[in-house]
Length: 114
Image 1 (tube, rainbow, N blue to C red):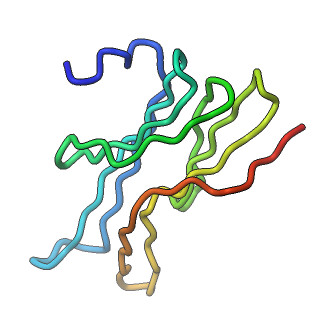
Image 2: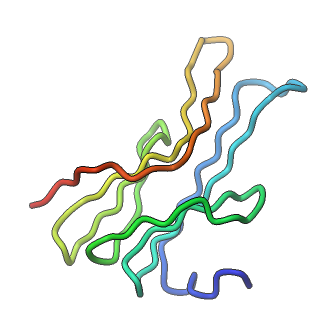
């Protein structure tokens, strides 16, 4: 198994595709894994299995996603804070179809404490 530390983690999978299936459709699948031993979140491309990026946390986090799947929140209970990570996947809804925009996952500079 490529990620043996998954036994002590929280995983969140984000999948997006733009509208009905056509030949030029774009699909993006990313797995965000919160490592409870090293206090970090790893973004993995499910199509290739490659690690896209790793985001350091102050304490182990539990992951939640926004309804749009554009961001992942890491709730760091021991540090009493929440960190936000952009999934890099956004769908612009046009009613009859959606345009998917795929970019790098990125950590936001700010966080909420308290």
